[in-house]
Amino acid sequence: MLAAALIAAALIQVQIGLSPLSRLRGELTEVRAGRKKRFDVAMPTEIRPLVEDLNALLAHAEEVVGRGRLQAGNLAHALKTNLAVLANEAGALDERNAHRVGPAMVRQVELMRRHVDHHMARARAAAARSVPGISTRVPECVAALARVMRKLHAQAGLDIAVEAPADLLFAGEREDLDEMLGNLLDNACKWARGRVAVTCRAEGGGMLSVTLDDDGPGLPGDCREAALEPGVRLDESTPGSGLGLAVVRDLARLYGGDVSLDASPLGGLRAVLRLPAAAG
Image (tube, rainbow, N blue to C red):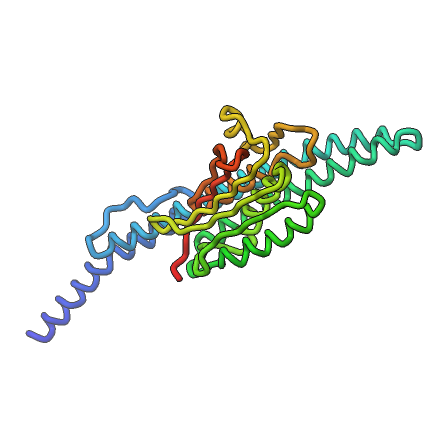
């Protein structure tokens, strides 16, 4: 009789203990069917952390889907506008005006390519942000870009000085760091009269900064924020799509950093890029 009573008590205890999991399974069915977005049923203290983690996972998935829809919508809108312009240019193309319409079509195609690259970079950065252990050596990236810029702007004879600690690491993909620093360095070289300085250093709070100074004409204070907006070009006489600085800011913010513009001690423009640092 004692054994039977113990067995019955154990069965009742197991049934009562597992009943929250049965309710959780029912909630999961509701969420999967789309009738609910979160688990809102009351659970015992032992299972409550699991429910909170599941709700956090659902919130993250919803954020990723929403961000993907926004990216797709922005890309579609950008391509739609440029395709309409390209179609009009193609319709006006004939032998008499080919020399005028052809370069305009090439510019539109290049702008579309930049839009695609922009949104692909954003998607790559958003995916890399959640992957632990990714790191990139900042000095190697900056030195490689400086060599490229010296060749691209060889006619200007620029003096590009680089200062970076050997152990400085960026917590992200090499392609994204190349994209951000490449845009900033190319912009500095376009406007510099003879000197560009790149200074990298570690900051507190697990961040690093890359400061780029040039001795060009600079930007007025009321124009610096506008220069970071997508598609804004403050000087139409220079080649470009107006997306470079906007790409830098978008990627930096996806990684939890930012970019700012200020007056440079060299007399031109100073760009300061702040990014998360990886442990050595």
